[in-house]
Length: 253
Image 1: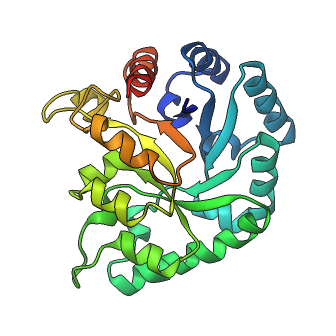
Image 2: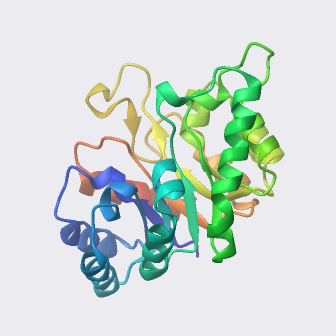
């Protein structure tokens, strides 16, 4: 049976974390994915307390998102945090609009930058990759995609595929699953509401309650190297509903 994870960014508006962990454990989640805003401000005691809270609820923070500044400027501290929390995979999740390159060479340079940033983490035994949004699938002036340029310049980078953002970017997820199946090590399992619906939730939906064809896509992502399947909803207005319905869908696939 697939061990299902939950991206804690989805629960950022529902503190405290201890209650979130209890909810997720009760619903059958076995893992969570952290993000820099959680552990970035914590001291060693805070990290140890976070690990104890996870353990008490039978959860493992198997994967984590770390901002590019954290990866490059706080490398040793982030490695220590990831080890303490028991992570096996680290993903850089985002690039602010004003930092994004505008041409193919710029994106290749960013891919090389990520590859350089990955080295100490990979040397420490972690999987290291990039997590996409939609902007990587907007064609550049030469017709190429930022996504492809990033991975072209970072041949050792893995990919945490956010499948719903691929769809929102106008790309065919099955094509990218097939093309990158040996580099996909984690998948964000999320869904998109029909147009005009769930506007108060950013147009996202609970998994299985939107337009993403998970019934067909699930077997495709299971055929990749992915070890982690992470439920995410960027702005749920009911955390329990989102977490419950999403894992129910996954268990039915």
